[in-house]
Amino acid sequence: MWLAPVLLAQEPVAGQRGAGRGGTPPAPQNLQVLPKDMPQAQVVSTMQEIAGALGVQCTYCHVQAAAPAGGRGDGGGGRGGRGGAAPAFDFASDDKPQKKAARQMMLMVRDINPKVVAAVGKAESSATRVGCVTCHRGVAIPKQLAEILDQTTAEKGMPAAVNQYKALRKQYFGAQAYDFSEGTLVTYAQRATNANKPDEAIGWLQLNLDYFPVSSRTYIGLAQAQQKKNDKEGAIKSLEKAVELDPQNAQTKRQLDQLKGQ
Image (cartoon, rainbow, N blue to C red; front, side):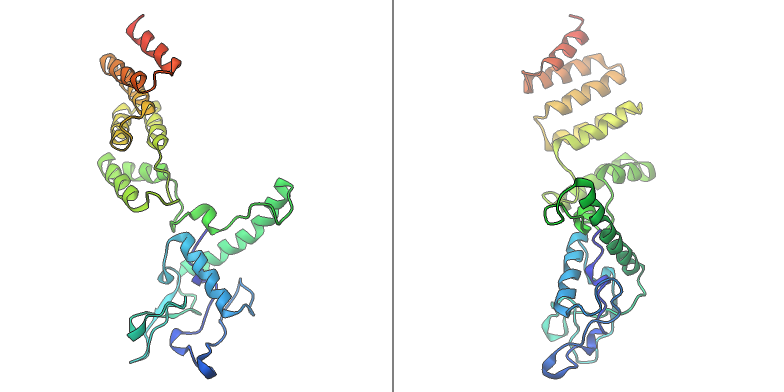
């Protein structure tokens, strides 16, 4: 549930920082979920943790404010650049709906964790805790990859969905945001085959071979889609390749023998 940490910890307008003696910043303002007496450093740390979980910046939840002329803006996370490079924020403002949503998400997490402890029957110290990252995993809107591809395919067609997959893979591969492992497109293609869309299934499986050229599972999926199209010859070739890649798979061998009529 990440939602940009800066959402819950409302500080004064950035240009007012350093108003106290010795440059000590004023206390955070407009805290509604976090304790009102939470130290500023802890507020900022919490906000940064939330922002990291959602893969966003302060601007996702907070309103930028015009920095005083000739002054330095403050990024709210202690990252203000020198020379006036960093933006200023009105952290106390509630104008952005994302900030309001983040508050509700935080309350939801607060409500869920005691239920998790009760459900698993463990001590609170040893039970797994739910946090923003549990669902968001580095993306602001935590949709599953299959759901994203479904929507794009329905709205813009399969070529656009394929391009989107490639772009997401390039951006997020190696992160925890989406599952780009071998089986993801195999499973997604199986859904297309079952929905009597073998051409779509074949397209996704051929894309999978670009990334996993020795995937026996992908060739098995191809054979299923090809059989759906009554392409017996193509299905045989795909199963032969699957057996070549995984000669210990007795089930695939049986399927190949049956398809050949042996």
